[in-house]
Image (tube, rainbow, N blue to C red):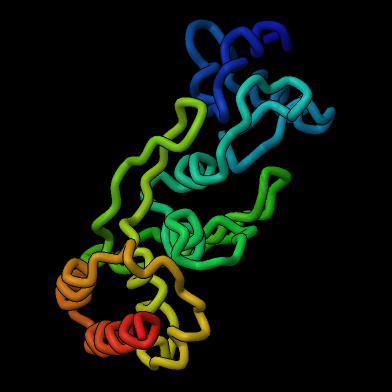
Length: 208
């Protein structure tokens, strides 16, 4: 395959899988070697095995970090600090994209960014939806309530009022507290139920 052929096929794809190029009489071994050469020459960025993006010089669409994260790990959704920042619930810019997965925890440090995947058991893998982000890209993102609950679930001592204060939560009116409490109960964690009570107190503090 020639470079011009590749651009015709994937030129408008934010990221692409090598399986997209294996139609017809393409030799997969030769294709793999060619992809490696393009990565080494700086024309392609390898995100993970079989997943690539065009380098900035050649790309027409900038891949959104949330979209990349979903493509790195299919069984995942954006949550934790990244989702809280997306919803405006914390003031800090979050450089790494944080996701929840039922698979093993992993971290990817690539030219397109840093991507962290935290493990959660299958029965807690819920309350997320596909959201349009930009440039016809979309990603699975947890609800505001589940994003915070995922963080509290995975963080020791997070049911304390002091911890919630240290998060510097803002725009708390964007949280549906009834949904928060219902989801906390559904997750079956006493710590999360205590955290919901602490969050109630924090909201009252902010309102005073």
